[in-house]
Each structure stands twice: as C-alpha cells, then as structure tokens.
Image (cartoon, rainbow, N blue to C red):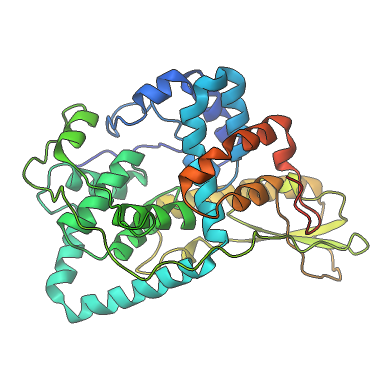
Length: 379
C-alpha cells in the first residue's frame, strides 16, 4: 500500500524549529525516556520523539539551546534526551577530527557503484531494496516511507541499516548514500558514522543486529519479520580509522578589515557569527547537491536545505543592507559548543558521555553560542 506524502516539516525556518521545540518540551523528560524507541509509523503524530533533527542538522536551532531548554524544564529527568542530542554532537566532533573517513566513504561509494556495473545481480538487489521490493516485513515499508516523506524514526533507521548490510548483504556505503540522498536531516557525520556503527566498524567488532522480536515490539505489532533476518551477524572488517586529529581551531578574522559572510546550509544562525566585525555583505552557498555520490539528492531534502539557507539569508539581509566591494581574507568561525564537543570526541561515545555534565553547564550558561575567536579554546 502506498504511503501518504506527509508535510512533516512544512517550513524550514528558525521560527518553525522553535515552535516544534516548544511543542515537544513537555514530553522531553520521563515520557521521552519511556517511549522514544517506539516507531508508530508516518500515519500518526510522532509525539514520542522531538522531530527536531532537520532543524538541528541545519542549525536553525542549536544542540546547546535544545539541551538547555529540556534540562530547564525537566532537570535530571531529561538525561536520556540530552544523551540522544549528545550523539549528534559526538558524531560531528568525531568526524571533524578524522575528515579522511568522510573522503574514504565517498571514494568507497564510487567503487561500489563500479562494482554494480560489473555485477548486474547485485545492482538489481540494490534497486529492489531502494524501492522496497524485498519481501521483508517492515523493511519494504521503511524504504517507501523514506522515499515519500524524507524521514524515518531513528530505531527504524538502525533496523533498516542492519537488514541492508547483514540480511540483504548489500554494500553498506551504498545504504548510507541512499540515506544521504533521501533524508531531510541527512548529515555527513551522523548518517555516515551511524551506518559504520551498525556495520561494526565504529565500535570495532560490535555489529547491530535487527531482531524480529524487537521490531515487532517497538512497532506496536505492525511488523514481524520472524525467520527473515540474519539475527547473528558477523561485523564487517575494514581498515581502522585514523587516530583522532587535533580539535578544529578557528582562523581568526582581522577586525581591521571589512568582511563578507559566507553561509552554507550547515549553520542557519548567522546573527550569532558577526561578533563586532564590519560585515559588508553575504554569500549563500547551497552545497546540498554534493552531499551524496550515487545520485541526486531527493527534492524534499533539497527543498528543506534551500529553505534553511533562505531563512539565514533573510536574517543577513536585515542586518546588512547591500553587498559592497570589500577587501577580504579567509577566516573561519567556531562556536564554543563545537570546540568543546570535538575535544571530547577522541574515542567512543561512552567516554564522551562522561563529559556531558560540563557540556550541559555550558549550554545552561548561554556560553555555547559564543565564538572561539582565537586558537585558545575557552572550555
């Protein structure tokens, strides 16, 4: 049965993100911890999860302000929600310190695509999986839901990835590329590294197994692929990632020179990036078409990214009346939140989680949005 195309994210703007955060906050405590893993489907209101991921991915709202709002409302009862938001910052910091992992993934997708040309049977299997024509209960539904809505519940994403890799025996990098093309909240770090985690390549030797009983229970009985899944998978084995590189550092701007702000879809809060510089204008670069390798980014995802960029540009237009010729030098901006979370992303998430309390304090203090203006990270 075809799934309806739902306007899950009708507007890509900071105002819409704040409205969604405000609507979710009453459920960000014990209710979230209890119900977050249930995937009740696209046809119901997903009140058990925040649905903030597209706004966080484009930083129309920030991880720090979401954490501060949840802790301010629920205190320690928001711990599970804080941990889940922490995963996003952890992935981002981890990849920022190992950019070669992203380059290797893109190169690997190109190699996998070449392999499909040489292996028509594998190409047909990938096409059937993308279209939701495998016969596996649940998986086909999620493939169609992803294509029609640009969204999947996080638990469904893990099940989908596990089935793709270990039951269908398809190249994991092509599955990650499918998500990069279709998810509205597709993020290079969260998406690619989550697929590596499921495959057993991040926490080495620990693959994530999709189990029929788990799917049946957490979909409230909608699906039961009993007997269809590989529930005892062997983790994939690839070359380990490089050791963590240095924490990203800003390239300070010269306050004596006029500046031109260059925006991408990665950060929709330009009003927090000026910090006293004489901004003469702004340029918006939509890099969304380059996030995937195997094909074009789906229109719902591309449209949300364009909307997020337009929302940021509208703010800039209000602050900078016109674009003027200016002498420029290259500078980069780094928020204290990103410097602090990257510093903690040296190893696995559970070590990172031990450092969450000072990060929560940073969020509550309001200092997370401040900029590191020199190469000395103020943590």
